[in-house]
Length: 245
Image (tube, rainbow, N blue to C red; front, side, top):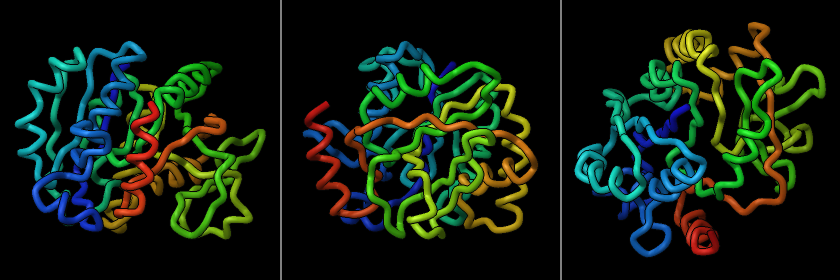
């Protein structure tokens, strides 16, 4: 199993930080970045290899690659997304389709979360599960969240931001365990999605899989402090949380 990080996004709502850096390299605890936290989590659960999908301001990640490898004891492979500033992240995850064949824990490059999330996903592994989403069933939901509906037998049945929060079972937090045997089917679903609309999220690839009859499971993370950092208010929350890990 390896780690996989989506770190190609521009994060324009975080300017001026992202004038020179991709969102994943925005600091959240002193010099510690969002990417640092994710790599630290991966190292703590015993992973030794990580693939990072880069695009916007990718040179900054390339410059730090050797230092990050030394700091976390990881072998890092950087995968270029050539359309990072034009297309959304369904294409970005598709760029990592070969990495997924190794079994991965996927983390969005803007999600600040504790290592307990990775432990929860690993504990949920097995019993034929191919894709497991980490979801928050505690947080109050609004319009911006990536909401999910879960059926006790069928697993995740719906994932979208465009849902009445009252209908949702919880929020997908941007961390997924993907078994290698699901790689080809997921890649095909992602391609279908971004070819139809390049601005689609990769979560729409998950929905495409479910629509085809593929079962996607979920793992509730419990009452855990985490945040998806999209704007400066989120960054302030991330800094409050990160210093507690």
